[in-house]
Length: 158
Image 1 (cartoon, one colour):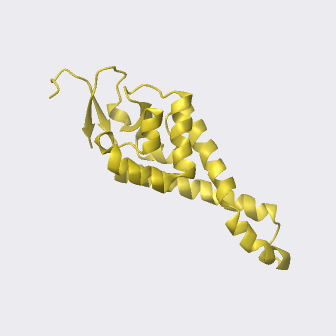
Image 2 (tube, helix red, strand yellow):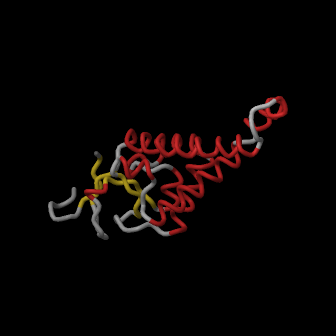
Image 3 (cartoon, helix red, strand yellow):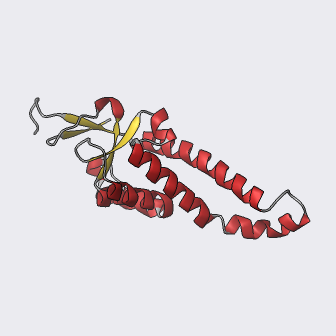
């Protein structure tokens, strides 16, 4: 049981994190799709023949774009566009700015292994609402208004 003087950090809801991810997904997917279309020129016969290849080869480049997007924004500000809209922030376990290593690990899981990352996170780390790669990177997602720079905290669920 925590005492009333122990600082508290409000962990973000899974649903809010999903909506933030969805906003980011729409933004980055639109950008990567535009890049694919520009790379192959206008829609003509040759492009239609290459469309199957373009759709199936888009996973790796899109994942790399997601990885760079999440890494840069979350390391610099703790927030992506989706997190900013929903007042969420990535922090370390004490409410401080996460390390680059922590962000790289967390972003890798989100970018390349998200279904595996989330499902195992729900099963194994639900106490702090962490995905597996959040746990490995020592990061959490919190409500911004409740983030405090502390070392001894109590985690509350939104």
